Length: 125
Image (tube, rainbow, N blue to C red):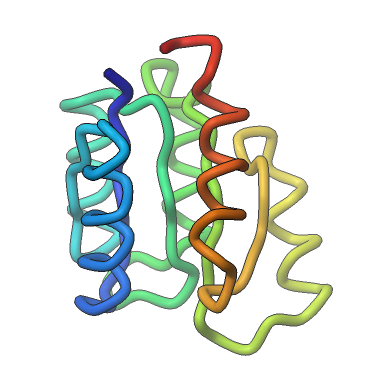
């Protein structure tokens, strides 16, 4: 069973994605902000992380860079899912990080998100 960590301060989005992937058989953990997300990533070493960009305390770019800096978390694929204004410069900034596998809007269809997640965690299932 694959483990997913959702790091997002939006309760409705977190709940919707958590319920969707739990129904698919994933074990889903939730972090309400970047600081909590970094702690949980080290504790549970999930197969994939869904990460928001704009969060209180520690933002998405800091989280992804800290994940990359730590040996135990650098190989975890990260999907950036943002509700904030989506511009190419932001996308390019995140895509420079080796562990960033995708950058998408929160308006993405859950079935599309599922395909992206399954493609990244399939070898571990």
